[in-house]
Image (cartoon, rainbow, N blue to C red; front, side, top):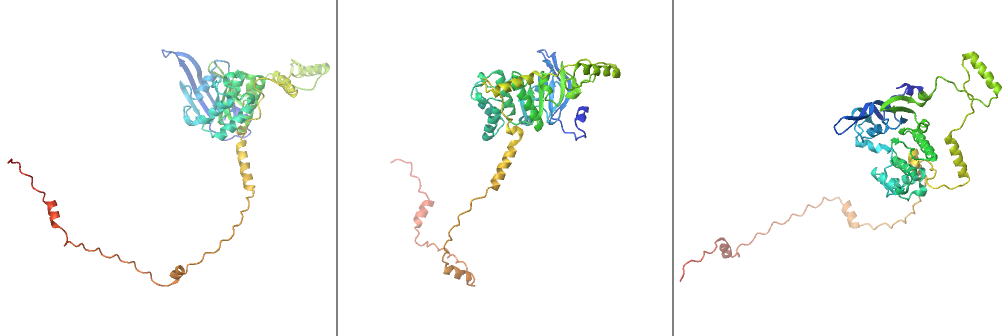
Length: 401
């Protein structure tokens, strides 16, 4: 167990098998003459543990998408070891447990949102009733209810991104891989995706979140690795990587100038340092934006395009099992209708011969013997017919007259 895991849990827990285990993972792209052209991933080692949100961070070209494609089995590693659910990434049996949102949304432009999700549900061999329920919930969750019957070619990039996220969740995966999930989304969609990732992480999903937008990742991930040039430059929890050890922040109510000066004199006398900066706290731009949007919605102002999504789909929250149990309990508690008593039938008249045959103490009669076959009388047989069949007539002579 690493120092990061030990800092989160007060007592050591039994080590579970990691969902993804990479050891000295390397991928080198070669040219036509088999010469090394680019070392996209260089000797990378990390683990993605069950039920955690894992950040795969770095600028463009750092090897994030290449690593993801090797985890999915879409690219073959050059060297090192890589296992997903304890099996090789190319094992087909693990694919049904994975949901994947690629960096670009590859969707059929001639299908609408419902047809797209129903198609991917069929690929996972989901029943028709389950597909319909999940399609309804996912479309509402990603805010495409008003545009669900429009073809994908008419969607904006942000709307296609929302549909791609729904597609990645149609099979209720145990392991979810999101490659730049907020690309093309407005601040509302970005906030919704972050809230969804947090909710899925609390439910126990294992998630890899790849992005170069660090502000989007900071609120979601439990642990992270930062890549640059195909190598891991830093890894750990957000607290370990972001905590500054060279400065201390104190937040209080509003202070006047005299109080600030007194604090500055105290700090100088005690530590030899000084109060470097006194500022008023500011809210984030995202918080300001969401506040403006909520006020506009309260005034019932309309906005074209995708709407703010609804609640998280029930099957992603684990409510399907609870609903089934409630349904069964209600069925058992419902009293059955009382059956109408049938009129008694009149007893049948007993057969006196049958009763007498059963009550008489007599040995059963022996079976009747079959008579012997009657002998055939051969006195009247015409022997000439039999002789003519046994002795064929002689052939006629061949001489002329």
